Length: 243
Image (cartoon, rainbow, N blue to C red; front, side, top):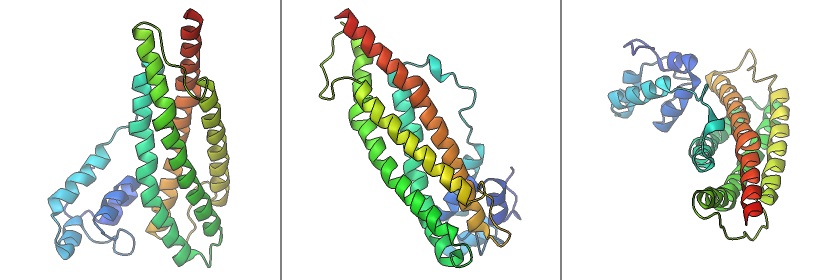
């Protein structure tokens, strides 16, 4: 989408809800004051409108990872990708969604009490995923990288304190089931992320972000459950057999 002098903040967000994160970063109200242009909003707050516009354009130009053959990737590269792409996504989006959901509860909770349950569920998700990802980053992924290094060198690796890679993998996969079930409940409560007729822009953006969060979570879990984890398990078995 081209930058047009008369394009309003609300129109940018309607075109691609991901731009809401940029406006939130600068404290620009895209909801109740979404009828302003970027230049008008920046003039009020004394921000550089060119800088904000550039970030909005960066978001609009972002591509997805569709069509990438992750199955052909080395395991250490795939582990890095999951961490730098999906772990960071969870961290970044959680910090945006949590205050948005809190705001919805305060403004619309009286007429839409299901928002309180959605908020509680997402708070639980953010907290549990933070712990889950830290375990992967500090324990599981480093060991997978050691297995990859061992295969490329002498085939030897130090036996981990958790016994076998299958033990932390089993724990991580259990967490995945829990989060999947959590988002089934969120989808049900939000009518598959359909905002009500009286929903404001923040309402619409929050539901769109929740839906994207669930979609990213599915990709995240797919890469681990169906590619990274089974291949790591097979690699460890191969190396142990050769010892």
